[in-house]
Length: 139
Image (cartoon, rainbow, N blue to C red; front, side, top):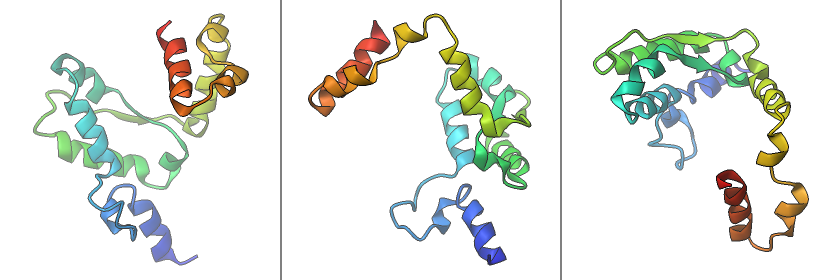
């Protein structure tokens, strides 16, 4: 594989303007999105959020991803953050979603908080699907 293509493919995560699809242009990169999300929270939460940024998922396993994310979030937040910024990436982050799912499914309340496939498909329209999910979430 062409070395330049391999680097460009991963670079799009941080700089979507490199994408050839015009629909993606004007979208912020992953570090910018994280920064904006934290800045939209209450000021009481911002300190904890900046102190506990956890990277998870297969894409974060790309070589240099953690360092690049850490550098970009620090540059974006240096004027706003009133605390240290800590970015961590667990060794087994590739499996974080599966581990979290297995933990949730082991709770005794799991069956009370989930929707059966038959209930979901028995609802007639997409609005009924949303109502089915909302009903289970609220009650």
